Length: 315
Image 1 (cartoon, rainbow, N blue to C red):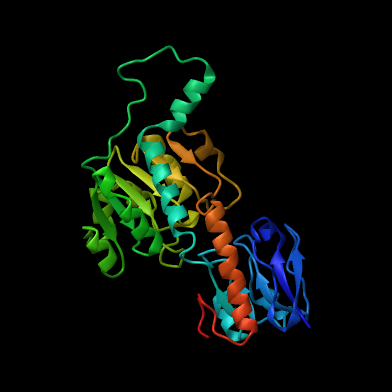
Image 2: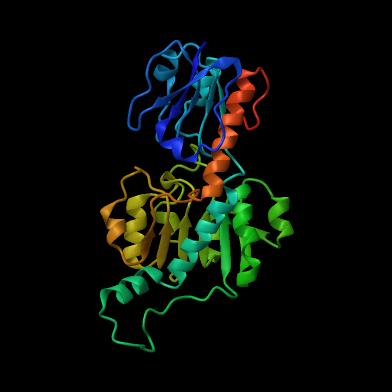
């Protein structure tokens, strides 16, 4: 009899019994602890904060499945896992709506300068209505550029019609879902950046997207534009973004992800036109419980000898 190693951080969202096939027991991995070496561990449910490479896998010779508690899986060496016959799964769909909602929240906060407004109201120093006080941007008639046409990108676009925006998207291949929403496909990243009033990033972090938006790309954005990132921090060059925000191009950014989490660079925290959140994209009760159920179901299926529901490596 083996055990299923579960990140201790996930215990608040368990809403189903951990009845693993084969009678395997649940064992918790304490927050901040390194992955142990063990011949008993047959399954692992980690978070994005757990980096899992070949040395870790070599210390877990009986491991059969890693059910990552996230949509992304850049914390896991997929090649090393495949070479050792370890199946890797993720948790798509269940957090799609929550993340798209948060992207819109950041977009609206940046467009209407809510951070500055909240701080002014809370300071007790508001002197009354002024004609040019904290002027923001209306969305009606503007262009929303969506980078990526996966589940979350499409969900972001699906929420757009009520705001009266025009939709533009950039993706490796055409998206029937995007075009059904009336979105135009940009011929290049440069076209999307230069024609959009708001750019929202919904791309996976892979080699091709690492540092995708650097100084040259950010310089293409419109002077009054907004950048929203709820995908991965490493897609945007942080220092280039800080410099661009200081120069007012883009005019503002709404950020939920960072290159070196949990660190949020001081430069971003101190900029009035940077709206920063602590990675809250999937932070709803519904999404987190759904993520747990899906991760646990993937483990159950693999341990029972069945195909997982959402594999990200060949089975």
